[in-house]
Amino acid sequence: MIRAVVPHASEDLVAFGEGGRRTAADLLGDAAQVASALRAFPPGDVALAAADRYLFAVALLGAWSGGRGVDLPPNGQEEAVRAVARACASGVLLHDRAGAGDGVDVRALLEGRAAPARLPDVPPGQHLVTLWTSGSAGPPRPIGKTAAQILGEARTVASVFGLGRDTRIVSTAPAHHIYGLLFGVLAPLSGGGAFGRETPLLAEAVAASLARSRATHLASTPAHLGALVGLDGLERLRCGFSSGAALPAATSEQLRHRFGLVVHEIYGSTETGGVAHRDRPGAPWRPFPDVTVSVSAEGLLGVDSPLLPPGAPRPFATGDRARLRDDGGFELLGRADDVVKVAGKRVALSEVEARLRAVPGVRDAAVVALPASGIRELELRAAVIAPGLDERVIRGALLDWLDPVTVPRRILLVETLPRDATGKLPRERLSALWEGDVLEMERIAEEGSGWFEGHFDGFPVLPGIVQILEFVLRPARERWPGLGAPVRLRRLKFKRLIRPGDVLTVRIARKGGGAILDFEIRCGAEPCATGLVDLA
Figure (cartoon, rainbow, N blue to C red):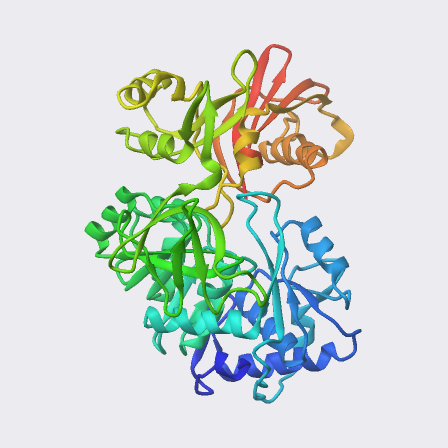
């Protein structure tokens, strides 16, 4: 079955991007070298954390060729990666992180040139990969996938969406997540096509990657697609894919109108694999081939599929409420756990979110029920992206539709929702918006620290980059070790020069579930620098 993953001719393109173009011959030869090198290590699964998708695919196929499974981390954070590596039977971590002190750099295994080797066939029931659930409905859990499950789904995706030899896919979803693994690596390979090596995140970088590579398909998330509406670079795309959250109807229509781009939404989970797809928000979901859906007496969607884990109950009960249609499709009615009682009334969080998104000027919204003081056991809180609107206008629009006790008690206006890389919004990230996580400290601008060197002779002042690195990012990482890498500075203002010996007060607030640092540096009562740091 592994052999079918690379049906290309030897010189066919399999990967493109800033790391260089690679052919099927390159991929098979490099995978053979990895398989050979792994023989020197203890038996068992290996951990894999490679940002370059070509190196990721090389390590993946190399491990599989050597009869090993691959364990992927739940995210790209260092501690999460190390934890997965420690849990592996072999204790081996394959990565592509320059200067990393632990694990094996995949690039070090590819020195020299190996002849392309045929990938072996493996039994359908052989374990190939372990992924993690997203954590949007509870703590992340490891889910194992057999050859029949993961490779069968890749072939289905390639077949349903016509991914052929001229396919070039750019993905903004990381390869350690099932969506990014399938649509960003395995499905384009299974169809004989190619994938982009990078995972661009900022809208401008995504558009540039699409234009530079002449990509035909984009696998992304609602947040990324929404940011692309106003940019160029999508004209050549044949179609797009979206997963992780509901695609706003406005985003879908704008992409159709401006670029003629049809975006296919994908519904599924790590446990079930792909369940259904649709090409327009609000349209019924259509099950993938060989997937059968049903609705239980409690109104929950059940799934029967060859992609389910061996021994799983059939039908497999999801946590989503649904309604079947006579044409074989179905409609999703929200999560079963999104119905809560507020002041004695049953409220569906998804309904409140839908009403918020329908308010003119609201771009996105999320609602959570949190413990409250007083007579209410729970109260609703909403995080809303609505530039130019205030809480009063939003609340007034909701009162036209909702009972006053079901209108969110607190509405927090934010610039971004703390979605993860796949577009999902883990519950703990959303709840953290109201935690008020703040770090405040005093620092002295020390003349002998080297911070002032060369800036400037005869009149030393503290450079802005030093203020960001030493007074904001370094203490923030010490306080919150799991923070992502900085990707953008916003609203940056330097208001007062900092001279040697100045006593400074630094205040850093972690917002957006840890995705944003809001900082202020003061000298006495005078503000010196303020701004926002967006984190990966």
